[in-house]
Image (tube, rainbow, N blue to C red):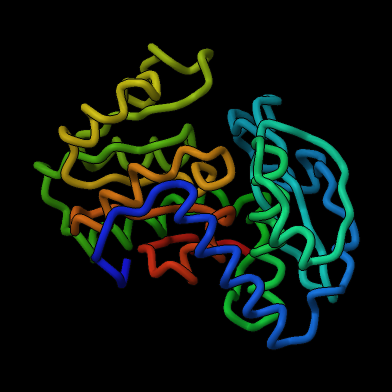
Length: 256
């Protein structure tokens, strides 16, 4: 992040994002605009028809919320589905008491940032793009951090193509919140319970973190790691707007 003073808590992170969303909506005069709907997309709507069928949104572990304002769409992964509609300003200031409310906020933030011209991608990639995305992230990683086999990568979140690509090049461990994945060996990488994250953050010299941590309220330790100057990269469309506003390293090469 650009600012290194202090340590951001979850409340601090969302306070900054609220302030930024309100600033943008006030500048564009869109605070009273209704977010058309925020609704769980089907797997096909969210990710198309990829050849691989092991993505959490296809297996039913996650869903995608989409918010649309002034024709701009923003998306966020969540484990809580539902429908919602409200003015942008109300969403910017509402209590974020659970994953559903946080996902509404994050999807709306992405839509607002897309409308404001701050983002080129605010929707998930589809069909063959998720596999292409993993390859492009792999090339980006090699350019940015080198292809040193001593690089120890912690992948936070079960993104199968990304894990597959990282494990082919580096020493990789994974953490995930889904008990069905914990303890499994996937593509040569062990999936650990998220409770093991602190020790695995000490083990790794690069953390590759799903942006869904923003929507599920677990992002603070990873932002704190980034603040401390330790290599931390967030991936995926969910965190696109927040990464732009907070100055976080972010990669999402195939988002739409």
